[in-house]
Length: 111
Length: 111
Image (cartoon, rainbow over all chains, first blue to last red):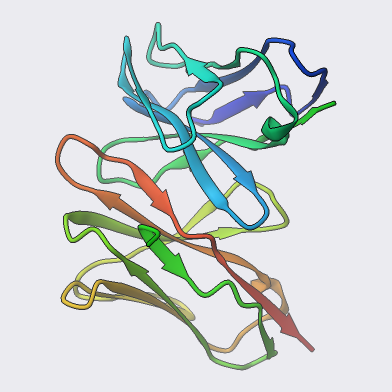
């Protein structure tokens, strides 16, 4: 069965370190998205991609970057982790005009 | 004004009750509409798509009013297992397909 997986599921890191969260989908979807979820804010879009070598900034992109070298993967990098980036991160994929499928999430704590 | 707005609740209802949630969206170019369910900060999962003609899936009915730019979800005969957060999702059309989430409405069904 097709799926979307995120790793790691939990991570604790120190302020200032570079962190990369992985997202891998086997749906063969062109669209991939990264969201963060915080109490009181709901899901907010960080970055998204419509295909290989395409990346775009979302509403909360500062301090984050993504790259898309193949269809299956969209890793999210925190260049220099800050305590404000403590959150739950969700990756999703979809075809246009269709529902998005989500990974199980990564709970990141920056200390 | 947020692009997608929902009443956060919580809605606290007894088993067997009927409960309705509304969601408003601001972008008239929106083309795709969904309701998702999220349990205890797990990943959101599609509950149902929302079509212009309205659609029903068992105890759940979704409706779209394009003129007033709102979406509704009706749950009949509530079960304890319906307790969750319900997320309204709207996606724009054209070359910029981005699922945008409301903050979610919390439902608590009690015995």
